[in-house]
Amino acid sequence: MHKRIVFVIVFLSYFQYNAYSQNLKTCVYSGYITPTEFISACGLEKKGQTNVDIAILDSLLLGIGLKKNFVIKECQNINSSSAAMIDPFYGYMERYVTYPKNLLRNWKNYNSINWIYFGQLMHAIGHQIYRHALIEGIDNHNEELIADEFSGYILAKMGASHKESLSSANFTNSEALINNSFPSIHSRIEATTNGWKKFNNGISSLEFLSAFLRINKDLGKVSSQQDKSIKNRHAMYHSATDALEKKDYDKAQFYYQELLRNGINFLTKTHQQLIFKNLALSYYYKKEFKMASDYLKIAIKLDPLDTDSMLKEVEIRLDEGNYTECIDLLKSALRLTPSNPILYRKLAEISELKGDVTYAIQAYSRALILEPKLINVRINLANVYINEGNDMTLIINTLDKSQNQRKELKRIENVRHGLFQKAQNVLEEGLAINPNSRLLVNELLILYTELGDGKNARRMKNLLKN
Image 1 (tube, rainbow, N blue to C red):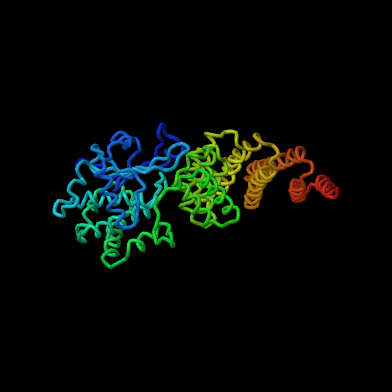
Image 2 (spheres, rainbow, N blue to C red):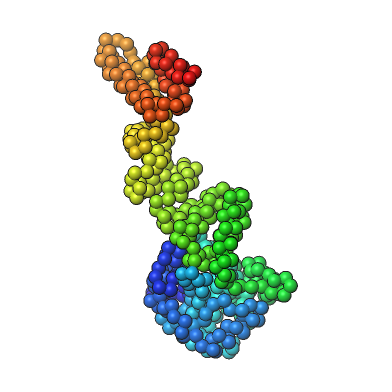
């Protein structure tokens, strides 16, 4: 069966793709497509809107106390309604709603209304009215259901029956539903039904919209307009950062999400990346690890050399006990930054947890080649050697001391001696580089004491006295 494109939500710049728009996804009512597909179908020109189209949509929206915050235009190359969001450089988020040819021509004739397409159109308008920002890699199920509820409410206001209001939910074969990138059929029908019922139960437009839009209590109105002021959005960015530093994570998320809804291309790419990174941190500290991980992936995509974001993503996987995925993430990061000793240290620590001692030794050693002054890495590597040596001691204690086992016993004793010697060398090399490190002196004191090396143990004690 030929797959029809239904509606689109896209974030693009006027002249070229940029860091922000590449991370926003194109929603197709029951799934997602790329921004490129939308551009090829409809373009970005504002021509195509007519006074009749504007009047029809103005009439519908004014009926619920709203003004349009989008451009309305016809697009003949998509067989349904679409909603596009454009974040131009040094501008504000511009929003488009497009619809297939002749959809609005008979909208006042009840018997001629195609409720399938009108449901899709109202859904697309709902995304724009609520100023949604759909981001690639982020679960936007909630935004889709909110747009469905808006569609149900408006269709009920237009006179649709409950069955007619659900006509646009005819998308059970959607691939997006199968792979869980979109809400379930049941959830979408329930959301549309909720909107339809709210109108028929007498819920006013003001009360209905105020759940997700700002209310001007003095005027008794809600507002869906974009904040066009760059000055205001700069202030919003700093307020978000301040809130994060004060550990007010809910407030930080509110300001950062408002920035995404209003457009962030007025910021440098570094500051755009920080929005996603800081959103990830706010979710991480709230222990909402799924959202934290999603935003971290975007931050890493925008700055593949951001070690902090990489390590935070690894921490989340580590909390889940997924050592293999942690190692894969670190190896991918090291392909981009092969001279990063911190990544090698983390790779060694996780390899050790996984039980891969050989790889842990290799990774710790590589970290020290890159940065010999890393004291904790030296101590960790020495302890790996010591633990392996202690395992050899256990094996020796189980061996028969008879003539038949003497050769094997000698071999294992040599291995054990070599491991303790490696531990000693790693720590002594570190002490030569960091002569004032009491941590290294303490580790060496413990090692020499356990080995019965009184001379070197006394040397370490004297260093501690000094």
